Image 1 (cartoon, rainbow, N blue to C red):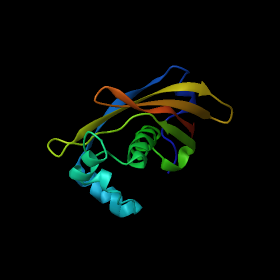
Image 2 (tube, rainbow, N blue to C red; image 1 turned 120 degrees about the vertical axis):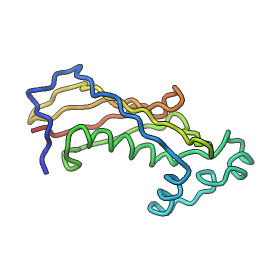
Image 3 (cartoon, rainbow, N blue to C red; image 1 turned 90 degrees about the horizontal axis):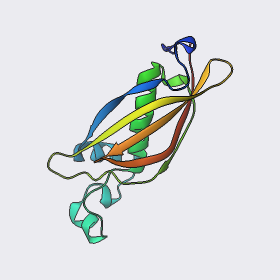
Image 4 (spheres, rainbow, N blue to C red; image 1 turned 90 degrees about the vertical axis):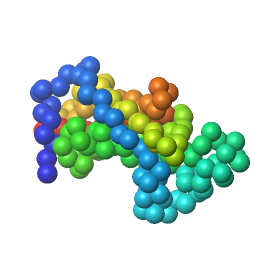
Length: 141
């Protein structure tokens, strides 16, 4: 698979339309099984509240993965992501009823040589930033 977004079609400041990703307790249990991270703050409400969290919270790496998915969906090729990093700045609180919503958007911040761009990513839940310094370097067609 190759990147579908063409280097000549983007400029610094090109916005990548925001996407919304629902986060449910079931997503967290499935992620725990896949990752091996069974920390009870990610699935047991009683335990999460006993350690002074507002409720069950998403795995940070699950949140990071959704932001990575946002970029790969945009570019059309997971192999086009050359570098990716974030800092965690907030929690995605996942109530049992209704779950949570993760809104992710992006903007092309730099155009590099060799058809590469740097994408700045913004991830929010309940209006609060949950990732900072989130950036991906992507190889475009």
